[in-house]
Amino acid sequence: MPRIVVGGGGTLSHEDVTALAKAGVGELYVGYVPPSWHNKFGFATSPNRRYWQGASFTDPGTLKAALDLAHCHGCKVSLALNEHSYSEKTQRLALAIVGETLEIGIDAVIVADPDLLLAIRDRFPDVVIHVSGEMGLYNREAVRQLAIWGANRVILPRHLSLGEIKSLCNTARECSLDVEAFIMSERCCFEGAYCFPSHGYLTRHLCNDLGRAAMAPGCSNLADPQSSLALEEHLAAYNQWRSHTTSSPKWLGGECGLCACRDLKRAGVGFFKIVGRGVAAGTLLKRIRVLRVAVRHDGPDFHQVCRDLIESPSTCDLGYKCYYRE
Image 1 (cartoon, rainbow, N blue to C red):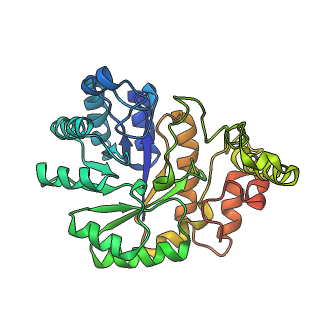
Image 2 (cartoon, rainbow, N blue to C red; image 1 turned 135 degrees about the horizontal axis):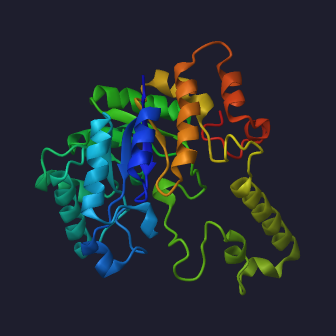
Image 3 (cartoon, rainbow, N blue to C red; image 1 turned 30 degrees about the vertical axis):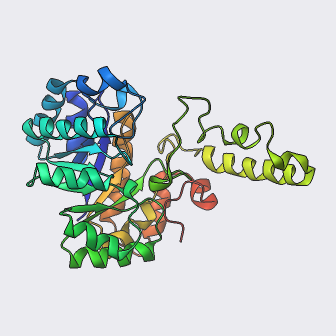
């Protein structure tokens, strides 16, 4: 049975960790931004692609307490160090973070930058390495290369098709690599290895303000009224896709891949990821519960069961929030 992997922010309480473990989480992944980092760079420059303070642990004692509690409940904890790239200074700090968290009991490190991956493997040869979906894992040769580099698990990018996932799972099996796939929350049109916006710390939050960014003064497409109208219609469709909400208070919104979990399981995916760093524990618990039902069900009414679980037919019919649309 696939294990459920859930992201946890730095505001997780002891009660939250216990509740998540009891709900069926097999693994938590967290960010850690220690004083050695945030005193120099703040939080807008991040080691883990979360750019606000509450999304990561910032104190080693608090992190160790969460780790120890998770381990008491049989739940492993991995550390996200999944930026696309690091400067010389930040890579040295990232390596120091790995060493510090290994000492207090972290179980694995999630990495996106190949250079950092190799540096971690050289410095800490026994560490368990999960390759982030941010690395851009799109073909079988990439899987084979990661096995050569000493990876233990590959996390697939969010936007692969089920056919592509099946092919990569076959290769991962040949290379004795575990496979993890996203199943819920935070799907974006700027995904993984294609995500480079600064998230609004300079002038514009491109993800949430694409209209103003595209229609900036001096843009050549404003000269042609027809082109301008087509662009406005395209941006309106994008914003509808981005902001579509469900009608179900039980579901609480969020992107969903429930109806694909049976095919993913058959393909060889052993870990299902629910994005959750910075998400309230109560919301995570509801998503964990519906995922557990979907993962365990294998009857002829499987897809109807998944639709019933989220209680929002419009979400399934429109497809705006669907991870795996085929």
